[in-house]
Length: 233
Picture 1 (spheres, rainbow, N blue to C red):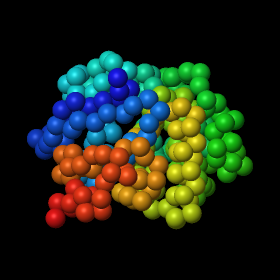
Picture 2 (cartoon, rainbow, N blue to C red):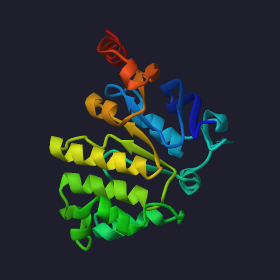
Picture 3 (tube, rainbow, N blue to C red):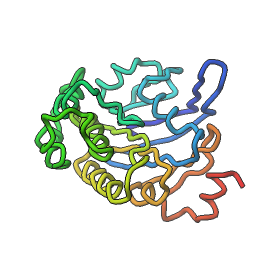
């Protein structure tokens, strides 16, 4: 049984339909990448999973239970954490306070106490008493990931974590994702950087205009298939 599934997932912003019948599955210990162009519905998909956009209960399943209609706080308590696009750190808090706020609403045992997060991201430990606004873009992204990890989620959802960052920083972040997976956390990565997505993922789903246009294991997908699924031409 999949740990996390979407079944015929649809999503709306008022009268505008953003997702059309998305079927996906994440197995325990797996990393799945969601790729696609801007506006394909990738971020909407994550928001639907975590309860920021709510739909029929049976459209999202977690650990055998329907959660599609559950509020975001309940989804988080069950063990799904989101690293949002844009990092969304609290500017009035220090780095460590930003990390610790990730425990609010869920205090579960697991592999990610604060000292392990500092071991994963040593730059954060050195800046732990500094205001989050003083961090570089890469350090802010590390803090956003650490804030999600500190709740010891069973599933970590990452939305465009490489956006606007230098290649060496992106490499370090994706190496951290490999360590997170090795510690037993299942991961969903929304990403436009296809190379990084293929490097870390066990399976790929490509979205195009709110629909799933391609799925498979990275080694099974050709460049031509990906191009057609990504751009439609």
